[in-house]
Image (cartoon, rainbow, N blue to C red; front, side, top):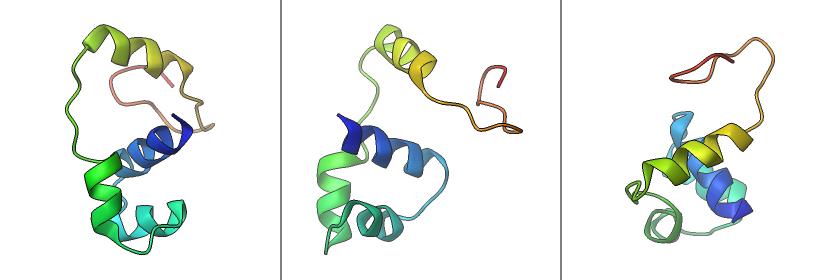
Length: 67
């Protein structure tokens, strides 16, 4: 779950698939994209619950809420 969360957060931050693959230690960005990126949210309730657990960075605002 931590690898998926990391990939998702980096994707939302605008990093390329190559940069995310490098961070996760993948040789090929296609693996990163196939396994960790591009999936749609299936439950907005679950997404909202997970969003409350996301750490905040001082001085940055969360998208869609205070931060």
